[in-house]
Image (cartoon, rainbow, N blue to C red):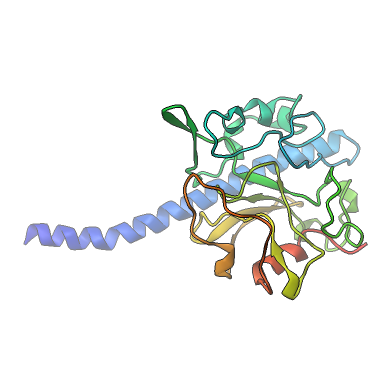
Amino acid sequence: MVIAIIAILAGMLLPALGRAKTKAQGIGCMNNLKQLQVAWFMYVQDNRDQLPGVSGGSFAGSNTWVSGWLDFSNGNPDNTNTLYLTDVRYSQIGPYVQTPSIYRCPADRSMAPFGAKSLPRVRSMSMNCWMNYLFDVAIGQDKYVIYRKYSDMVTPGPSMTWVLIDEREDSINDGLFQTNLKDRGAAARIVDYPASYHGGAAGILYADGHAEIKRWRDPRTTPPVKKGSPIPLDVPSSNNPDVAWLQERSSNLK
């Protein structure tokens, strides 16, 4: 009887503990994002309103907010190299960052293989590609603004323009999160996938410094994760409300 009662109590408590853990991780994620925003904004203030650069591909250089390429290949040093996050040679905001741990959401449990062992990857945060994008990819630049300076964010303004987001472990690679603003509605596409670590939601940070945990509505935004395997990117996602939500908050018409 005692064992049965304990089992019943455990069954009642475990879901509550799970929810409490998810909430605590969400708070930790938002705290990390806000610390990164402070570093980002300090760079802006020290550089005459200029935004840090956002680059794609396996990039290492001093003109971007962060360097490196994350994947699941065995022995890739970028997966664990914190210099790409904090060293001025590879990260414009690095000198303003106190600890590299803030680049990783507390709920991110992704690992990278190194021989017979696995190590935690260093980053789960990616930046809005419309924040001083350094490359020319046809995703709507002819109609929408690539923000080069903080003061460029006029409409809808900093409080409605996102800067950083939690990206899925099987989607994240370079330091940018690409949102295609050209293809909308029935033609919409998911280029990069936001994370859903927080009960189907992701941490997202805005240019004015506030953060939120955004819950995704469409199951196409949150397909099951296959551990250690990348998800196909840049796929059609017709009339996906989550894609539309990100598009509305990524940039504005010229």
